[in-house]
Image 1 (cartoon, rainbow, N blue to C red):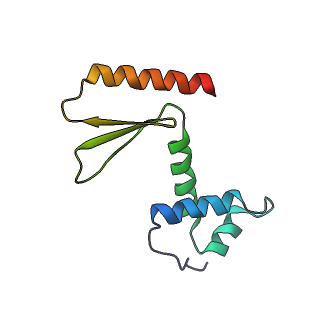
Image 2 (cartoon, one colour):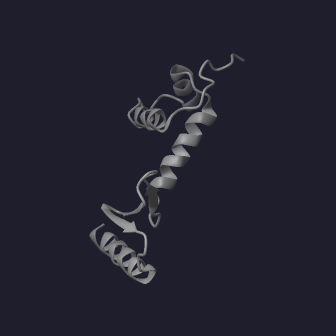
Image 3 (cartoon, rainbow, N blue to C red):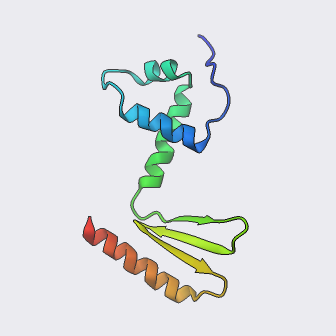
Amino acid sequence: MQKHPHQRRLTAQEGQSLIAVWHGRDTGQTRSAFCQEHGVGPWVLRYWLRRASIKAAPGFVEITTAPRNPVLEVAVGDALVQVRRGFDPGLLRSVVAALAAEESVSC
């Protein structure tokens, strides 16, 4: 069995690109043939597919922070809520719940 030449970890952008190519592939191509063609192990593809499915799962809220900016960003569907120090947690819960309810109605 030949070692895969692609031993380094993929960046998030490379992983997302790999998933896009996987979804756009010829449906007759096997997973192992795809991985061999793209120089990655099957575990790499499995990892990125799982990561993409978790990120796309309903009910998940992605939270990101800017390293030098004391702003917390909360994404709910297409909405992005910026939270600064001293925010009211009850108000944030109400806003997130309202956005989530609106998102589920529009689907």
